Length: 433
Ligand SMILES: [Zn+2]
Image (cartoon, rainbow, N blue to C red; front, side, top):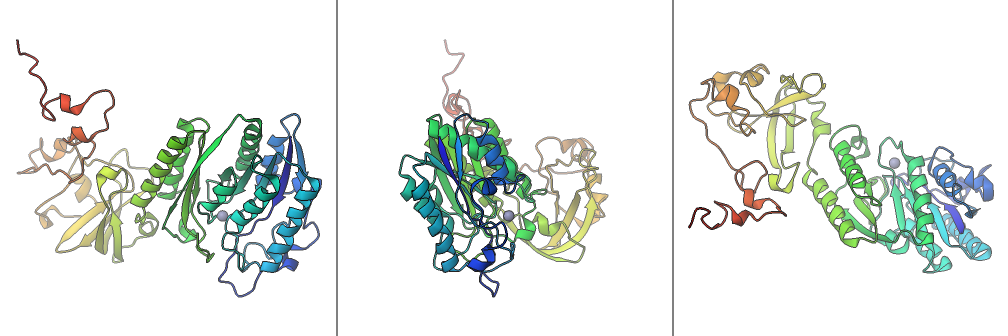
C-alpha cells in the first residue's frame, strides 16, 4: 500500500498589508521531503499520521516535497499565486513521477488564503485527485479554524479537524486520518460524508472551547462520535481574518457507508449551533453592574424551546449562585433590567429555583415585583406554593411543544402512539364490554 504524504498549511490573515511569498516558505528545513517531511511536527498532525500508518504492515509512506509553515508564522497576508502554483505544481509533478499511489495524506490547515484561488485546500485536493485517479483514497487533517465548504469533500474522502481551541488534539486527528485512510484503501470503510455550512462568523478570541457555548458544541460532536461507531464529526469554527468565500462555520460528518446517519448528525449539529448562535455568555462573563446589554437569551437546548428572545437593558447586578448544587461552580448569576421595571436573572447552567430567597439573596427586593416567572416543573412549589408565598400561581405553556409540559403528542415516540392514549386521540374505552 503506497501512500503519498503532502503538506501545505497556512492560516492567512488576508487583511495584513504584506503578501506571503515563495521566499517566506524557503528556509533551512523547508521545503521538506522524504523522511524529513515525515519527521516534522512529531507531536502534531504529521506525527500522529506517521505513527499510526506505520503500525500497519505493508504500508509505504512517500514524503512529497512540501513547504512547511512560512517563516512569517501565522501572522502573514495573502499567499501569492506564484508561491501556491510553484509549490503545488512541484507536488503534482512529484506525485506523477513517484506514482502510482493507493492514497494520499494531506496535512492542511483550512484557512489558507491565496490570491486568485478561492478555495486553496479544495484546489489541492482536486489536483491530487486528478493525478491519483478516482479509486485512490485521500485523507486530510485540518485546524478548527479552517474555512471549508462542500468542495473539499467532493474531492477528498476524509477530513479530520481538531476539536479543541487551544488545539490539543492535533496528534489524535493525524492518528485517525492514518487509520481511516488505511481502512478505506483496504475496503473496510466506505466514507459517506455530509458538509453543512452555517452563516456564522465569530471572533477567534471568543472561541475558547473551555467555556460555553463552544465547550457544549464540541461536547455534542464528541457525544455523536461516542454513540455511533465509525462516525466522525468535524466542527470548523471558521477563521474570520481570512477574506474568502467559504469563511465561517462548517460541519463535516463522515460515516461508514451511512449517508442518512451523516445527514442526520450534520443537521443536528447545524441546528444546535444555529439555535445558540446568539448566546453571549462570553460577553456576559465579564458583565458589570451598569453595563448596557443587548443579548439574545433562551432557545438554547432544543428546537422545542423556540427562538431566543432579545433583551435590551442594563446589568443590574452580578451575584454568586445560591442553590446548593450551583454553588462552588464559580459561575455567576446575572440580573438584567429591561423594559418597564422588568428584571431577568440568567444562570449559565440549568437550575430550578425552589425558594424565593434564592432570588432575594441576590439583592433583589420582593416589594419591587408584582409577578415572578420561573422556569420549573414542580420543584418551585416547595418554596413558592406550599410555603404560602405566592397568592396565585399560573402555569404557562410555551407555543412550542416542550419536553416536560403537557404536549406529549409532540414527542417522537417509537414504541407507542400518543393518539392511542387519552387525551391525544380517541382510544377505545378499555372498560367497554
Ligand atoms: Zn486554529
